[in-house]
Amino acid sequence: MISVTVVITQAAAQAAPQAAPVVPPVPSAEQIREQVRASLEAARAARADANIARAQGGNRRVSVGPEGIIVTPNEPGQPTVLIGPRAAENMIPPQVVDISIAFFIMIAVMVVGWPIARAFGRRIERRGQVATLDAGTMDQLQRIEQAVDAMAIEVERISESQRFMAKLQHDTSVQALPSTPSR
Image (tube, rainbow, N blue to C red; front, side):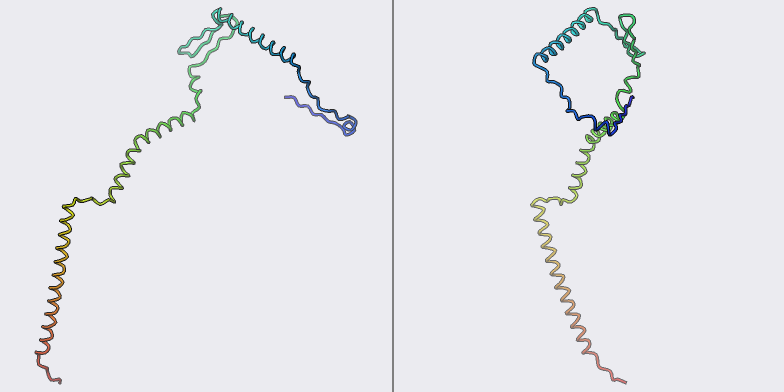
């Protein structure tokens, strides 16, 4: 690398008049036409050279074998190109391989895991639901409930009657006992 340092003294800077920036002249229409014609002629010449080389059978021969890819020239003096058999291993970065493997594993987990997750969710939802009963069973349960309520009322009446009888017996036994003299 070449670096150039320019040092301008103050006197030299003051002595040099300020010049306007140089604007390249605008090419005329005729100059532009000539540039386009020259480009077209160069492209036509390159195409003609390529057609001649193709007609002569090309200038290289490619063979693929266990040693790799070998490109040999048909004309002497041109270099032979050898591409090793392991050259393709380094073409894809390892991060791309890792990402693609992770992507396919994610797809497999989704294919297997989605139905399992749905089944598990449905099972949890069913636990909170009460089983529905048909009309005959509901009528039967209603009658059982009414019978239990009637029995509860009757048991309460019997217990109230027993308390009343116990109270009467207690009152009569206190009156029937003779009073004892105090000493």
